[in-house]
Image: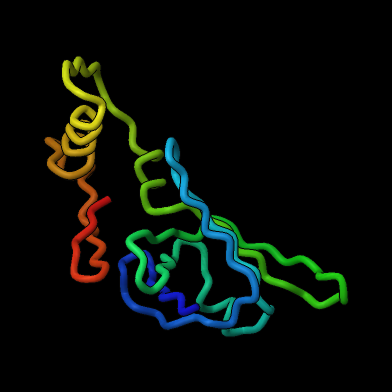
Length: 141
């Protein structure tokens, strides 16, 4: 399975296929997560850096790397373990200032909160400008 790797600014870094385990967990009520196990090489250390974005080919979801660690497998070989969350995890880092009273459906309330606090904010420093283009569709965080 091909994994496309991008840096934080979404500059393409390369295609990674050298993993032997990938757990890609979608969640309904919270942010999804992933865990990747691969051999420890200089290439994997260079391409799988904290903050880099991983996207599976033909998928609408992508994730960012939060954690890297080394462990040994049963044969004593060093394995690089990479974990992270899906891009919607960036929303967990956002604080909603003030009080919002929304009298609408849950879906529309969430859309309005994201719009006011991430996309069309009054304070331009709070705007998240990165757009993720996947299979011709623009996904905004």
